[in-house]
Image 1: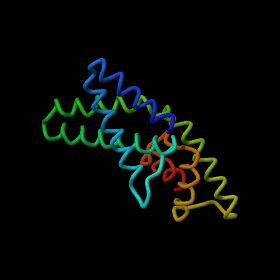
Image 2: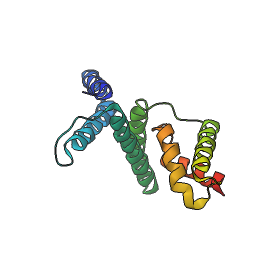
Image 3: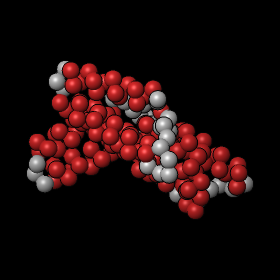
Image 4: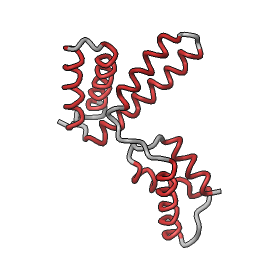
Length: 155
């Protein structure tokens, strides 16, 4: 079993014992998403820590989007609950990259793609640059943020 998944299960047990309803709810939903991911496809499999991180990132994103929707509909109590759950799950994610660190990674990826192509990449090669950057970022920055940084550098 992935180390991170085992930690989530242990923390869920502790949260239930301590009657932390928000934390327990967030962890339950995440573990359910992990189980769904494990059994999706042709055969059941065990997720690696990297795959578990991707699922947690997806769950955080869902919570943030739901909080925005609830806030927009005037349901502040529900929006606050969703934000609290996203904060709980964010504690399991690696520290996010700063803008400077992200820019450095983007510059390195652009240089790498330029070396492969023999010319400076443009907007058409954005996919190649994104692939190189995402390999180095590995969940430490949101995809939209990475795409915006790459786009700004390629213009």
